[in-house]
Image 1 (cartoon, helix red, strand yellow):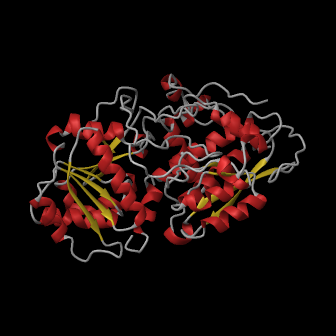
Image 2 (tube, rainbow, N blue to C red):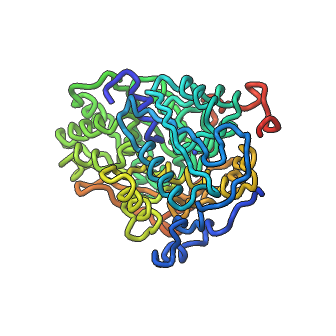
Length: 457
């Protein structure tokens, strides 16, 4: 994005997170993931059994819940980004779930809460008055509404969380990382700096959009690179309003001999930078394009530059779309989109949204009486949640980051799995843990607004 708040839009993609849990969604489910679709019920998703279905719901006085439906909010910046992936995923998942019988007989009724980037508080306050929970969405400036959400005790199951005040905040559960206080790409960067391109470790460059969000991220990446054995030898900012000629930046990168480049900005700008690098005949060993670039648009924009430049991204342990042929859960999402939202594109954020919906739905399904407390506690009990096969196992009971990661590579033919030596199915699960030493802020808590979990009903 060539706008004032380029950093915020970047974070959207980086990133963009009875009361018992049913079995059948843990790390040892590879054989189940390969079971024949013919044996799968319409209410099953991947390895998750009977996610939705009919039932006799008990009367409830909880906000957003009637005898017939559960109203949930879906945060989005669609009015600003024009990207409908969270809204599309909500339509597809709830249509499928409701066709299967809903949550114990109650239909899911999603309501889009369009923050338009800057109206996060307004949308959260609206959700506070009507919704049972927030599910499957995300807004770039999500920390703006987190204290309002906590004041009204509104649980959040987002597809992604972007800012420090929101990541790890109370009453928020991500189906997979990031985890507050930790560098979320430690496995990925260890692979880049130690395994794949060890000669690049001493000359890493970081370039970011000149906006508060991305500048803060740049500081975190610099610390983490050093903490993982690398050295940042080049650092620069580019104007958030846009760059007409990327050649001076390319020349600076070449002059400083940058061998590994971290780019924190929009992928359209990265594509132009890489074309400039190619034009002056310089190729770093690797470029972290980040998950913002993961999709068909970036390879199309970068064009011939991808024949020379080496771009990678890590997907927070989410199964790549390219794995659909070997991953029934990914294929199921694609099939459901074709049925309920024909013509809409399945994207990485859409996959993460599906994981969030599955976390919420399975937690709500297992409540004899539907309350926020029951759903929140059910979801938080998961020790190896895989969203039926959409992601590497994630432990929601832990405050430490996951050890599994997946790396994709951009080529002239599109994105594909990188040669990163996975050791557990499609994932590599040896990530070290890097906890930030710098003070980048803290997530909001119920105590910050004078509340506690005892107030949740």
